[in-house]
Image 1 (cartoon, helix red, strand yellow):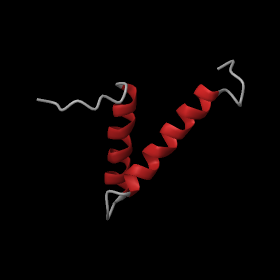
Image 2: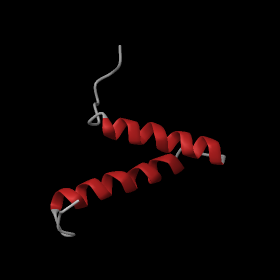
Image 3: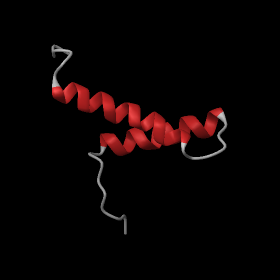
Image 4: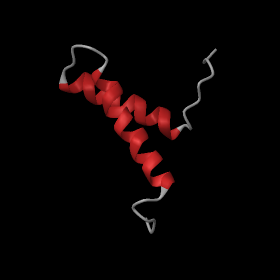
Length: 56
């Protein structure tokens, strides 16, 4: 990506992606399919800019 390893934005991005995996585990008893679906939903949330407003 042409960015330095210690770039703060790279670190923030990495932390957010690692948080996705952690948040997927919290969902309780998981199968491979439900775990992957939880990761997919969380990555989609990140890609949308992490909007915290309620969907009405």
